[in-house]
Amino acid sequence: MSNRQTKTDVILIGAGVMSATLGTLLKELAPDWEIKVFEKLTKPGEESSNEWNNAGTGHSALCELNYTVEKPDGSLDISKAIKVNEQFQLSRQFWSYLVNRNLIRHPQDFIMPLPHMSYVYGEENVKFLKKRFEALSNNPLFEGMEFSDDPEKLAEWAPLMLKDRTLDEPIAATKIDSGTDVNFGSLTRMLFDHLQNQEVEIHYKHSVDNIKRMDDGCWELKVKNLDSGTVERHIAKFVFIGGGGGSLHLLQKSGIPEGKHIGGFPVSGLFMVCNKPEIAEQHHAKVYGKASVGAPPMSVPHLDTRYIDNKKSLLFGPFAGFSPKFLKTGSVFDLITSVKPHNVLTMLAAGAKELSLTKYLIQQLMLSKEQRMEELRAFIPNAKSEDWDLVVAGQRVQVIKDTVTGGKGTLQFGTEVVSAADGSIAALLGASPGASTAVHVMLDIINRCFPDQLKEWEPKIKQMIPSYGISLVENPELFQKIHASTAQVLGLSEGSTNPDHPETGETRVLEKA
Image (spheres, rainbow, N blue to C red):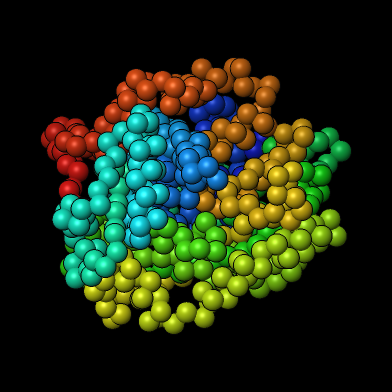
């Protein structure tokens, strides 16, 4: 066992999109700071950020129906949709900054233009979708959204979904062409290549086993080299725990009071993947439906065109699964060892409250392939079982905590940042919209954890992210300008010049459904 101690400015735990984003931001803001990354797997972006473990929607609330909630009086609350959309715009701006400066290249390897659609059937749902369309289409962030309940129009938008469909109830959809498909695995790998070029020390096959505060306020990490078995001690002024589902255990080991009374509930996802290119070619959109009554928000069914490994694929899901592991590569004891004296009552309260979720998960686990195919046929009526395979997606850990509004043991479905009062350590917990809002979440961490540097850093942040601190919904002209320029740089606008081939003027035209 080695007791070698090395001191550094920043340690990032986990080589996913969150650590990649924070590391890249900090390298721009404080180029002289020393940063180290520890990842227990052999390469970056292999867990929650991986393209097969992540829906890649580029969540911007263009099609996700659970971000617009119907209030008791029948009106729609669109505040969450606006918030999520604005957060995704920050990501687009930061990625454009990196591409513009050649810090990352070939944006088409991680982001593609793709229409986003919402699709419903049944009279009540059609009314809801029309109301949603009316509430959003007047908003500058959702400009260009179309609504139709005409089957002929819908067949133009999504031919595969209308083919052989028996129209025995009303159907409707909205479509907006400014959506994207994001390969977060590819983006994560690009960002880590860039960080390596910036002399950031990245240690793969290194597991952080313990973390404790020292007398001087710094943090000492006990890190195991999984190849040699040796144990190293690393000291840092600031630690970010970005280990996906693995973050909860490390947060608990840090002993910070802010990490108490928080539990985690693991949910795994399964997707059906179409293995026939000729079928995938007939569909060109991400289409989100409505979660069935009693199902949790994370179960919203969607039929997605995906670009993975330069190939067009078709995915449908998610179907929920259950594993006590907090990571795909985790331990079956993860759930039980996360129960501590300080969170046991929170966990028990959640168990009592979430009986419907437990029931839903059990039902999902018992589905046969044919039953899953029946759910898919609500989207593709003539789907054949032999054309689709089942793929196990990422493991998510939903946060359970005590809240003022929800009371003890409330299950949270979003992304949560937990940081120490002195800002010396921060952890990221939770799930969707996660990766899509990575830049917003990391700016939140910078605000909380580096208040003394913020004034000095602000001009640089505004250079990287022009709308930083500004509401885009209240500044529609600024939004249009920023949206158009990021689309141009990232190769998302119709006829935009590919930044990788400026000399040839090669263009990428938005493929039409």
